[in-house]
Amino acid sequence: MGPIVRNVGVSPVGIRREYVMKLSSSQGFTIIELLAVIAVTAVLATILVQVGSQARRASDRSVSASHMREIGVALHLYANDHDGWLPETADRGPDYSWVYTLVPYLDGGAEVLVCPGDPRGDERRERRLSSYVVNEYLFQDAYGPFGQPLPSHRNLENLVAPSRTMALFIGADHLAPSVSNDHAHTRGWEGNWLAVIDAIQPDRFRSGTANHDHTDGSANYLYADGHVAAIDARELKRRIDAGENPARPPDETD
Image (cartoon, rainbow, N blue to C red; front, side, top):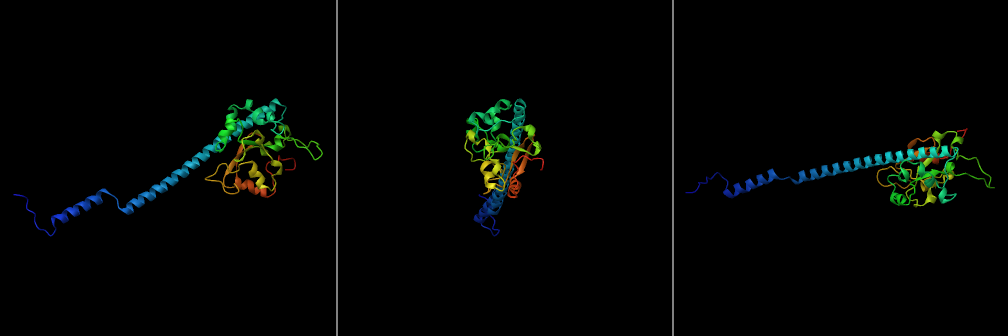
């Protein structure tokens, strides 16, 4: 004889349906719960991406500063061997470029000439070129309209304030991998931000893509005394717009 089903107001079919619904609700998620999980996951992913980007940017800035300091040491070693004179640029001829003449003084060899984050870094590395560009004030002699030589800043001993004299910049991303792009034409920077961003990358370390005038970020700068400093691109533009030329070596009146 089979089991007796008592009539308690619920049919056997209803009991099974209620049991399935309870089982489903205990083992799964509601739509609201799923949406909440997705939202939290998206927020966490965004935070992780931002943290990763910031960490990568900080690492690139640190490596770049290390490279630039090593270049600074090499410049002083070169100057010591040449009565205080700094190397020259490719304007005199490709073989005279500091990119080549300075390599024997670099502990890390030509590898330190490539800046982290340079989108054309691999090309420059393969061709033994540099992501960095020198200040023409210090590496090129200037001449007047009649060919007369102007006071030179190429000799470190002639600099009035080496700690305030810019020597090396991070070259602009768009510069072709060519030894002729080994220096920045800094004598025309006063009040001309377009000339600045045509030569250097003042926003090398930034979040996301560059804005239209490359002011959202910062870059490292090597000074003639060998120290490296980071400058915010907006601050550099402010100085340029005010008619200052930060690349011009200070004189006794500054």
